[in-house]
Amino acid sequence: MINCKDLNEVRENIDRIDNEIVKLISERSSYVKQAANFKKDAEDVKAPQRVEMVIAKVRKLAEESNVSPDIVEGIYREMISSFINIELQEHGNLESKVVR
Image 1 (cartoon, rainbow, N blue to C red):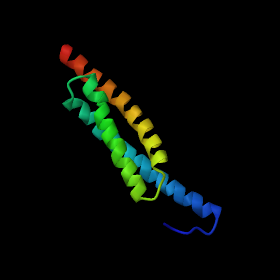
Image 2: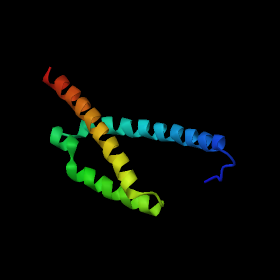
Image 3: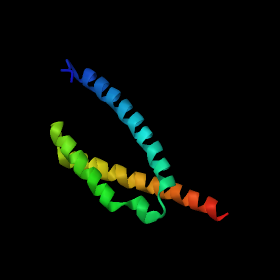
Image 4: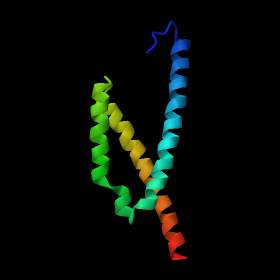
C-alpha cells in the first residue's frame, strides 16, 4: 500500500485498483459461463452449499487481509447472485440447443 500525498493520488490508486478488479471479474465471469457446461440442472447452478462455502472462505480471507468480513460478504453475495443469473441463462441456452 502507498501512503498518498493528496486526494488526487488516492483517486489514481483507486482507479488503478478498479481496473484490476474489473479484469478479475471478467475472468471470473468466463469461468462461471464454462461451469454451466458441467451442471445438469438449475439446482446445480444455484448450488446453495457451494455459495456458503465461498462466503466462509472469503470471510476468512477478509479477516486475514484486515478488511471487514461483512463488507466482503456483502460484495460477494451480490456478485454471486449476479453470476448465478448469468449461469442460469447460459445453462438455459445449452438446454435449448440440446432440445433442438
